Image (cartoon, rainbow, N blue to C red; front, side, top):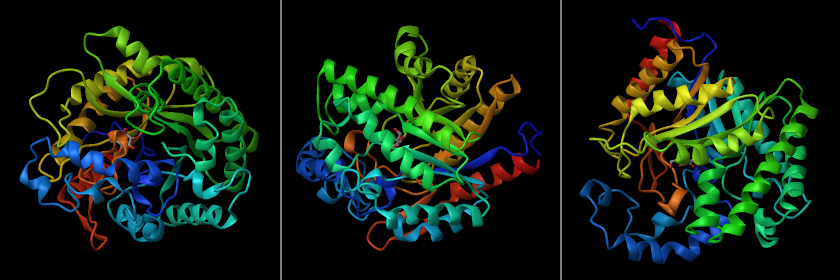
Length: 397
Ligand code: BGC
């Protein structure tokens, strides 16, 4: 039995984001995908792909791979998916709200869609799972994009209006994540331009970051006005940089530091480090659990509770996932034993889904649950049962 290092109320679960799983969204990404799919297939043809990737549907050489379309149809199947999560021992779940559903036209809110998310939250609570709700995970409504997106200084007011409405409508939520991975999004969207809005300019990069910073601050204050005791933070993409403190400062710390005390916890999304590694995920990312331990230690400098808001592996054969989760939980345990205040762990992801960063699409398989994209059939992977055992050992051990 594992020794008891985990507080009883530690949150164990998995994460998703709206556009990656819901299906039938219509936002800035939907249009970007339609425009880029052909090009993505052409460039995929220049690479050599293993059979275990090509044998899946869709695969990187098919246009459907790059069009989110129906995705996992989670919008209609969330109850079934939460039944699975509950069955797998999860006591919390992280998901995001799709802004383009809530405010499809500027200033016009869709009550039916707000009700949908109320039901999502109700469904989680009924199953004994605490909702961790992300307000923005990469996508924006088309009207917002057309007004210049995050480089428009009005973007802050637009976001704040949406936040007021949605948070005011969901008073039962205790944990809010305002923004997901601003560093990844502005890097790909405004610096290298490989993602929406496809800009590549230092000036836009700077202004987008600045407006995100203001947007978080505004959202933090609004949430606290509505519910003083709610806890608010961001989910931040961190990488362990072994020999590059300057890079680490810019990538891992600058944004978090700039938020100062307007964050109640630090949300950490960890996938990789810059060290060389002998094992790699299907996306070619080196696996480094020790880097996880080291970055958690580094993050403890903020003296705030930490939630691991994402940690996961693209592994279509499910041959590495159990070890990946086990090793990362061990690393987290080690950090906790040395005093790091970690309060929850969310595996990315509950379901296979539409991989947005770099528009990789459906082929990377991150799920504890496998999705058959032809039939929408769900199949629980063996590693999901192993994760369940780990949760039980640590919860009751
Ligand atoms: C994001 C997810 C993404 C995952 C794997 C993070 O960058 O928050 O949307 O699917 O990591 O790349």
